Amino acid sequence: MRFLVNNGLKGLLWLSVLLAAYFLFKEVIISRNPDVWIEKFYARPTIIYMIYGFSEFFFGIIPPELFMIWAINKADTAHYLINLGFFAVVSYAMGYINFLIGQFFYKNEKFKQMERRLLKGTVDMVKKYGLFLIIVAALTPLPWSAVSLLVGSSGYPSKRYLKYALFRLLRFAVYGYIIFQTHQF
Image (cartoon, rainbow, N blue to C red; front, top):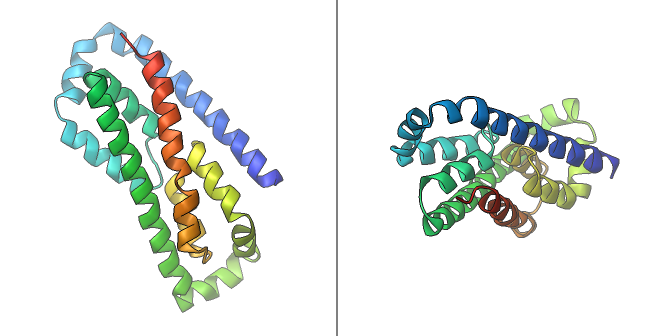
């Protein structure tokens, strides 16, 4: 339990750092020449969607909140909600794909040998506390795809993963609402 609380607090700390960096970037860089930034990023949404999908697959390199901010500044409320739903579904799906990759490793005999040598006891802890790990990663800035990969590689049941991973959708709803409230014109 201490592990989950410590990592949950670290996740909240990172969220605070990211929000501070965003507001600093917005005030120092974007406010001085906003037209250049708008033209570069808002004119090509397909590239943004591809970057988002890539990021969600590769351990959440870019926080989804930045994409939510992009979406709120791009168009009206209806388009924001559509983008928010898209981001949530893609994040959930990419987490599940990483979970399936982890399950593939779990069934691989060479991985099991490596696991016995390097990760003694970790798999048992993930099996025991997987529920909490999934929920904490789904709701906080912890790397969702990495946690999904870890949980899958521990042999966690797929149905339970899919059920608890639904908290990821809740995160997008809550964070999306907060971003909507703080970025209205």
